[in-house]
Amino acid sequence: MNARRRFLSFCVAVAIFFSGVALFGTDTVLIHGHIYTGNPKAPWVQALAISGSRIDAVGTDGEILSQRSAKTEVIDLQGRTVVPGFSDSHTHMWFGALALHGLNLSTPESSITPEDDPEILVSRLKAYAASHPTDKVLFVRADYSTTPPSTPTHELLDRAVADRPVVVHNTAEHALWVNANALALAGITDQPVADPAEERNIIRDASGHPSGVLLEAAMAAMERALAKQFSQEEKLALLRDASQHLSRYGVTSVVNATGKLAEIQLYAALRDRGQLTVRTRTSFGAVAVNHHLTPEFLADLEQARTLYHDDWVSANLVKFFVDGGTGLIPPLTYEPAEYKKLVLELDKRGYQIMTHTYRPDSSRLVVDTYEEVRKINGPRDRRLRLEHADFVPAQDIPRMAKLSLIASMQPTFCCDENGSNYDPRDRTTTDRWQSMEKSGVKLAFGSDWPCTWPPNPLVAIQEAVTRTIWRPAKGGNDFPGGVFDGAGQGGTVPTKDSYVPEERLTVEQAVNAYTQGSAYARFADDRTGTLEAGKEADLAVLSQDIFSAKPEEIAKARVVITMVGGRVVFTEGN
Image (cartoon, rainbow, N blue to C red; front, side):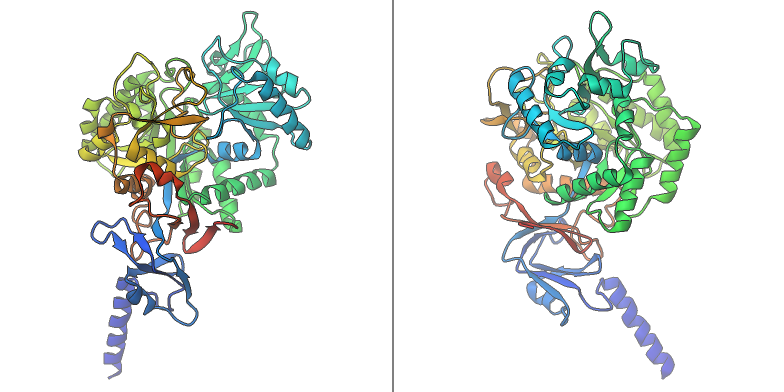
């Protein structure tokens, strides 16, 4: 008899385990909702139950309420729409943290530039400096030309602030405009710097004096100097605020498209303090800086992979830049043979690879290299990524699908009347979202925050559904290569026209790209990306139903609750 009871108890335990029902009762239930699960077999439910960090069950109100106990918290959604937490496939949290901490001159409402508004810029910066007397460095975010000779100079910034470094991040994050004090801090003088790649990207006048604009790899000289200006606690506070800012927009996980071991350690410290509100996967890479497989670099990669691989802080990812993001045409950064050799070696060591590409020819180089990697290193689950796959030639899309490549894209960069092309003479269709979807390419959407401001997935989803053409509010032409003034950015205004409307996505497709597609791209699709029993309770509650809203009104929706791992990390009004 005892043996029979033990067997029956075991069977009950197994049944409970595999059904996803918690042994110790449900902690939270969400009822009376319009919940999009992302599961094609059961895309819509009324309610869900959560125990600990995971979803117990989804279903009708009656089914879910039957699981509550006296201690269960009941959240009445009052008919609101719920979606899986947004997974931003491409961010730069450190740059975003600096932008939050500084003066932002390029917002959806307006853009103040040195070309059009020099006196207003000086006035705003003077006032900001006066109101932040204890800031050791003043950070600004602005749009300006990165194409010599029309780039701005340090003299304008010196007029505003001469006693402290001023660092103005270009909205594209591929250039810095700095004052004379900042140049001195970085050790940039009339003499060439030691690194040839950095020196090539320092804009100098005819006499060899640094102008104040640092492009691409030259940014690294300034970044090294800036890293020494913050204490550990200051860095943690900046990233904590960045994490909480992302939570306001329903973002529950991110992939950082630049980073290093020291930054990953900061996320781990925040995790350990319970102050990290987004899940992070951070790549090794700096903007347009070529990799070199030095013993120190390989040791940092291995240490990060060994120590950081949980749901909150993970690594094992290397970011390449095969081209930049400045000038009339983005500059190439690698010789093809060098890039292929490095990717082959790092892939052989088991690292996931993501590659930034802004040109059709460099996009083809990336696809060719990934194909070669698969042939030479053999089959495995790589999830190789093309960042900003807007420029992939149409004939390469089937190849991407065959190779199971991931297109990590940012809908808010779209759409000018010429798409995302840098060269105004190039009329090639860009941002081929629907073509990729139909071909079986995995789409993973993100913001590239702070290149997109703010990092609102709902703006991106609206743009993916409408492909609205945006134009500068002031009229005239945008800066050459100004692809970052797309949907609702930098004072741009919508037109009534659409760019290649046949490439639009449905709302479901766009949401899936921003949730399950991005979760797949970060090797987390077995735990996040959809709202199903057994998965993490990462979700966003919206103020209105984006699935039934007019396409041009999707971005009017707000996130009212963000939950990560069953914990509410943001509520509107708090």
